[in-house]
Length: 335
Image (tube, rainbow, N blue to C red; front, side, top):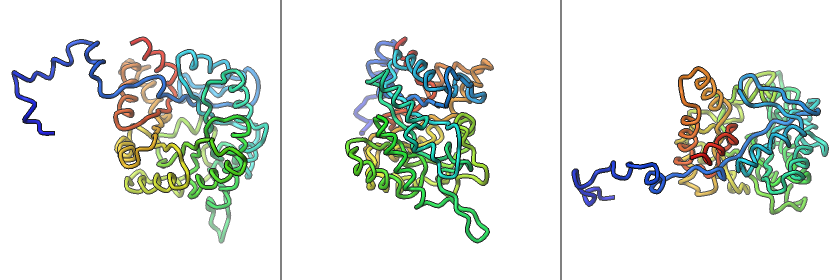
């Protein structure tokens, strides 16, 4: 843009368009709406179970009946979608709870779709919560070394995605970061007759320190090592573009950047490079830091949360996964 044509002070006064709340809303370049929000839920076995997550104020592990009851709050506020994570009754080295027909996520899908048929139910497709060792893939022991085996994991991920589709999921979201998993899931869904079911890929998922509270909520901390051999190095940006390109080529319909706030540059690059519907995950530590500072009276929780989410939208996010979704939707209606 040639700024010389815009004029100079006093002809051009930028404050004119900031003079009232009505005018500021009318000329806003970026808009945050309840329709942009996805609410993560942690479901566990039992009835009338509500187990608070100490590191995430306001977040609980919920039995299916409580998850259905709690979702009413989000639906009434206008949140259109949930993202399900499961905590199984038992864990093993085959992640059998992830793909069991009566697994905890499968139960939750059926219950939520029965109660709220218009709610968009997305499922996290990963194995870490269901593996006894806490990693996202099959563990192999070779020559005194232990590794997460990529290719043997793909079949389990595909089986899990199909079981979610059979239970009634509207979308699956693979978060494991195994190479080739989108192609494996797409092929399995198509063979099972779910060719119209979209895939939201955790395409650029970093090995981030911002996931700490989530490990408690999902009971998914690895028993040994870490996830740096399969999740992305926080130092790398160009690699994220390659990761996203591969997932799109394999059949991803939407892509995600995780975490969000510390990776707004990645989010912007992904959106501008590919133009595909793009999600940002406002992860557990982002949520918990705001909650902790607000509890001390240091910040305005509502104002900071809305500003952070607006920044994600401004960077290119079409969808935002946030633990604050019901509150955010209610705040937006009150404006």
